[in-house]
Length: 352
Length: 239
Image (cartoon, rainbow over all chains, first blue to last red):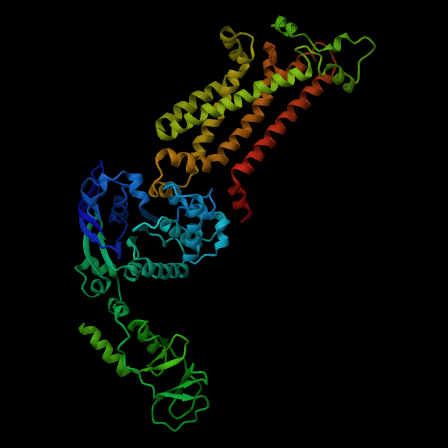
């Protein structure tokens, strides 16, 4: 656990970057510092591994004040990922990843083996180990950056806007990858971003900081969206808070109907306004009017229990029937969530 | 000064009686006469007087460059001082140094070393400046000590820029040594001083060819060193 106890950073010219910040980053959880530029989020992060020293207050790492620990020793025990990955251009990828193990004096073979293992773990081809950073794309470099931070298996990981320099598609995949890794590794992660959507997606807890380095709100993402502490947080969260909050509502209990499907070649005869045409192997083909007229119309799918209510609602809005198609892992139809079922679930979510 | 020239003794060309020899005959006769003025000895002198400034220049420019990076205010005065020394014409510098070091190789080596430093300090400073900030930051964050960071991260990344400066220094040192001929220590440059005493070209041609060849070899060696030391630079170009 990382504890900020009334931490202040004041520069000689009088600028206050961080102002009496007190919070805890619990062990095994992702704590996100989010806020506009000048809110002191990066400064706060760098005070943890003493790249910047606090002027007042205390930062504790599992109860021990970091200022009592020699900086290089402290830093070797804390993984660090930065925006441009910060890979060493003169080292091969495998040696980049093995940096901290080398610093810790690991045996060369062991360090290399660990590096290769991590390369795979972050979703890269082990053959890339022999390349130089310049031969990798931005997204690949960032994966290497994460692998390098994990190399010596530190309990704590600091991430300073690690995904903001890559394009949105790569960013999404890197975020998903991080969540997948975190589910396996359970590191104590402090993650800095200016992107509130990223904060909400990745954070177990989100600390919203305002300019001048003061904590505006610390809450889990769902609470943040439903109960912003003040106008600053509300404005920072932006529009669609209600819709975005749905991504934290499970589709587990959503009532599914299985009687609304018909096989290919259906020619009418049922009284329902819309029916879902399903192929022989169980995959959805499209919606058809109850009288069998018209071609199959577009549909949207979600995986019940895995996808959120936001995805289910989105799927419903994509089809003329207003119903969302529930599919299993293999893409086969598991049932249909009707408007009534969605309505009931939404009403329940609003009460929660 | 003329005494100094004669002390080493001219190559044996003036002693040839039956007509001027061909360039090959001249080389054969003067390659190794066992006297100070033989081509072989002049080549050796030339090598010493150009290599010492290159090596000493690098050895001195590295700490000066590092200090200039560490204490920014030091850079302009230091670079300025060495530029002024660089700008001084070599003849008066030789005259000045003769009173201290006499008519020796040292008198040639000292100014050349200063020239090397003048070129290499900015190369070291720019080389270290070419280390991207995020790379330096991540080295700090991973727990490098300052010295280790310098040796393992910053200097290696600065190497291509420093080597580029070193190539300029090597070629110019090798070429400038010949100026030392005015005080009798010009290495292969000694071969030129005789051209206006006696209109005989082979020594001049041999001098020029050997100096250019030395420069080319030195440059080729540095290019080779660059390839071996900085494989990632080639990797970058290839990608």
